[in-house]
Image 1 (tube, rainbow, N blue to C red):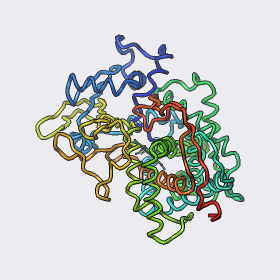
Image 2 (tube, helix red, strand yellow; image 1 turned 90 degrees about the horizontal axis):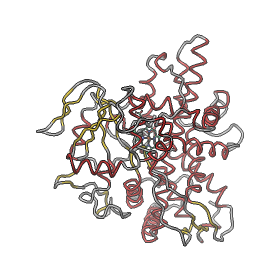
Image 3 (tube, protein in one colour; image 1 turned 90 degrees about the vertical axis):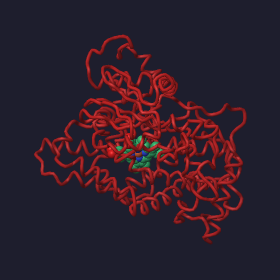
Image 4 (cartoon, rainbow, N blue to C red; image 1 turned 30 degrees about the horizontal axis):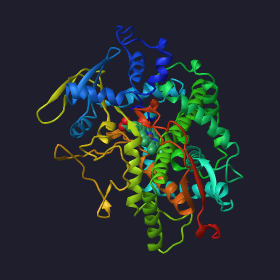
Length: 498
Ligand code: HEM
């Protein structure tokens, strides 16, 4: 899952164990994916600078050779719609299918289950459209459950906490309960904090696994990954109730195959690993995105106040008290804008596609580029996110960038032309992240809860949060260092008991 964009990161770390990788001036030893991925990852930390420099020298479309593979970068966002349209020849899964089994540890048997890939793809619909409503409602209940028990039942004095840890502890458990369900006789799983810690340890190693660094070189990562996979043992999962339709369907999907004993064992392992991969897909980017949305609001009190007011107005308008059943996902343009703005500043999801045949890639009405089968085509949306021609003062957080006259703002321009794609944290085309609507809803719900229930302030004397660049190209970047903040329950809510 979620790995076609996984590229350029972890330069520093891969340099430190550079013996695994070849140097720039060496000829490719093996022409293939592994040296290519390793090499591509090497220039991760400086990707933005490197690509900007190349764009300046060679124009909006240029090809670099990385470990024997040709990689063509499309830097002009006005060309994106044309490239995305040619999705039939430009495949996402050829790359992700190489990276995901390595990172998540799938047994190499998917091809033994005919039709499985198509069914996996069909299951994505269960994260969208009408199916989004039960998922979002369930998330609201779980969010309130965790938040109420862990944070609301405290007295009203100021408390200090680490912000990333805070976001993670709430979002991890609430998302887990929403996707996978609750234990048979309790509302929360015991051992969640162990699972959470293992997840963080695995996640820290994730860029290295994407770089195809053998897992046995990464300390205890293999054992940790196995513990995470074992959490999804079938007998354990079958006792959980209230799991999402998405996970139930994916659980049952594997049962339709009539298998001999050996394949049955592989199938069970494959299913468990898939559940684990979905756990990563549903949290690996959502938690850092939640952190940045919260961080930017708390560090811009005027924006926080505006968004809070919007949420209170929406609730007042609908004439209801805020409660676990309240859907706050619509009518909140400024909240949504603040979330988008943090995506703009902190997401770096490179779109990687592999040419399926020799063909002429149409760039625009006049231009095309010759592409060979196996070449890589990359869109690098971070360049557009930080382009001062598209976004004035691009390094600054402006919570209302995506609102105009009380409506969603969707017109952003480059060279005087309106852009079709102006914000791309979720990939593009047919493989665009299927969890994107749920992710945005979850973050909105989280912000609603904390803004309505808590007073929030950054602790003084800290430097600004900066991005950990080891994930550039991979998705939403983590903060280089966690941030301390203060919170206390807001007056009107302590006694309500909601
Ligand atoms: C802030 C949160 C998220 C971000 C930034 C994000 C980003 C992405 C990106 C960039 C891709 C690759 C798309 C491409 O290259 O075209 C992707 C794929 C995927 N995402 Fe997300 N994602 C997020 C949340 C979620 C959630 C909550 C779920 C599930 C509940 C999810 C499930 C998936 C899956 C299953 C794929 C693989 C799609 C395929 O194989 O066709 N994601 N995501």
